[in-house]
Image (tube, rainbow over all chains, first blue to last red):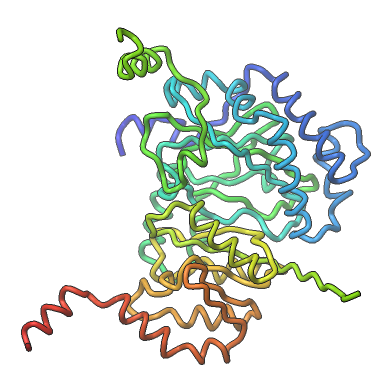
Length: 258
Length: 144
């Protein structure tokens, strides 16, 4: 590991507070407006409505919930430019870490984790299937803490965990139990984002708190960094092009001096 | 008027993390198999690249995911990366009453009887898949 990668995001991840809370409040309002229609919610306060979503839709089977979640993603992806909003909310952090030429994932994922839902996100890492040059932005729409938050293993813990997996390639449960001893569940409040390297092991536990977690996750990468196995043209779109890259493109295409 | 029965099955999709084919390409072909079997893919997953030989993830995941009717793998090659065919995993999945599908090969097994029937062909494929072709040819040449 290089000295720089050791320093980046405090061992692979960092919680960063937005400098533009209004953007995230509007984003949450827009998402809640759509959720109210799809899930037939009556609560007017978005924070309360999201935290206690399980009280209204808790009886849905997991596959029905997933179908409605997909419908929600489809509807709001057409109306909201997630990449743009999340980027603007955390622009300083993202530009500092990725540089000024940035791609963003076309579709934003929305995760709904109700209390005691037996199907949390499995322990995994995004890279090497995703590019190791991606930053994952995990943006909760409600305050997240303890098992309501996702868990993550920092660089040293991911290294230990993968070392264990290399020696125990047959028993996934053993690997999961070992890794979970090394994890932390960072507390991330609404208005903050958890940013982490795609190389880190992460996942979520069964939510044992009394509130539902609703969170977004979306990936950013430098335009010029190597692609992963996800088709970059299909998965990402251009978000920001630096002045010098524009000049370079103009020069190489013959538009600058002819 | 004829009565129409709509069966919508739920599938777990497990793509091949070793293939150079991009994930979306694999997903499209797996989705087709789900549609052909009156269903749709509800969840996606894949083995970590460190453990593709033994595939330890998928069985645990299927056991704890409720209401899954079938598991769609992108290719049967995913069961051929170890020095023996991972037939145990195929059996264990079918024993969970979960059908098993290989999208690229367009093969589906819904019970042990169907799987057993095809075993000679599957093993033959496994040995062909793992044969070091140049070494095989060199050995033949030595004799001939």
